[in-house]
Amino acid sequence: MDKSLLELSKFEAADYLQTEEDMRNYLDEVISENDPEAFLQALNTVARARGMTKLSLETGIPRESLYQSLSPKGNPGFHTLWKIARALGCTLVMKKAPLEKSA
Image 1 (cartoon, rainbow, N blue to C red):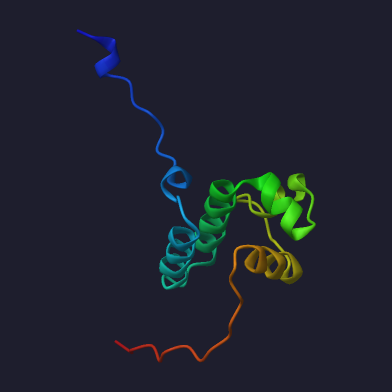
Image 2 (image 1 turned 90 degrees about the horizontal axis):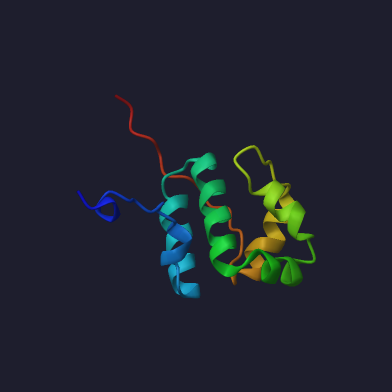
């Protein structure tokens, strides 16, 4: 049996986010899920797709701090999120949440 047929490559979502529009659409979709952990993971993915070094230069946040803040154990502060959003061409918006349907 040919071993090359059995090799799997690791899926990397960041490889599929080619444009700024792709990145913003991805974040919009994840935000709609209302899951903070998923949002942090998506922000990490977008940051890697954009390039951590580039994002670091654009935000003024050291690259190592970005990796730490956006890691699964990270807990980025408001100012960090604000700077990242601005660097990605986004803004943070608060709006009234839709009413949840009761069972």
